[in-house]
Image (tube, rainbow, N blue to C red; front, side, top):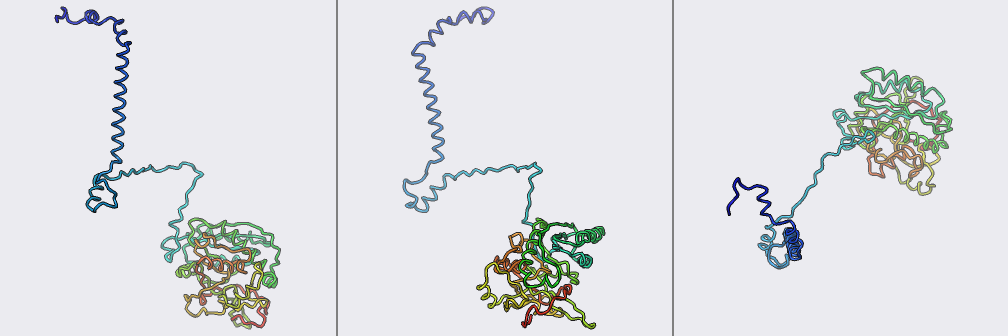
Length: 409
């Protein structure tokens, strides 16, 4: 075919195209439309078959046409060697939380070990106070001398139902201590809570048998309020220390921590001077070893009755820690106890975190610290006393004869 002179032009090409009416007639013919539909259907079916074959390949079973139970070891090896099950791991980027109202607390690193100082383990010293102004100066003189690093110690006090200057004197003493940079403690917290208790605080009334049940329940409540207000996630140990201790070793925290016990108490004695002679008296009858006689007695009591030790009203036959040991002997000797007093207690913080507190009700006919010991032993924790490690309490000059004709030891 000869091309026109000057090459192919739009006019020459257009002249060779069929008229548009002819094209329109062609595409609207029935045979053309049917052919086009069949072609599209074939393409769709082909793509579907190819996709199904690809998916079926994932479930294709290689090997002989028999149950795996009937295959030989070689047949199973050949069967499983063709393909491995694909495993998809969905790895996530770290989730960033920008809300200032969301905090996280990791208790896993918080331990209570015998290497507390080296591990920088923090100690919480707790002291409940009521009408205690007279004792606070001596109290702070003693904790001032504690050799455990003060920057690892937090102090917390609960002041309740006081009629004297307890709050003012406490604040003044804390100011005196905390203003001294080299001996200041990590922190100090004062908690105020009145419970509406109406017990007179004379020695005779406070230590009478009739007052013991209500009084111990009230003290239990005060201890629990103090504990749950002051305990922080980073505390490893809790040291309960009464305000009316008059002497104790400066290394008492290190000494007690070295025993690695869940709950540990010392022996509590007092000095009483008569005619220039020091009478070393035994103070705390709340630390004891249970007896069969006491267990039988409990079966006869109302569940709400609170037993109080050191009184003639109930002869329990228990063995008291004050009747054992001597401060002149080995201070590290241990005995297992069933009840404890509250003058001086060192507790691993996780014991409290586990829910072991001071029952303000009769728990196995005991309340407060003795109920605490009973509860701890029920939960499987160790309750240990040191008969030869003596902490000296103020002489309360109690009314004699509480034990009747019985001997304390």
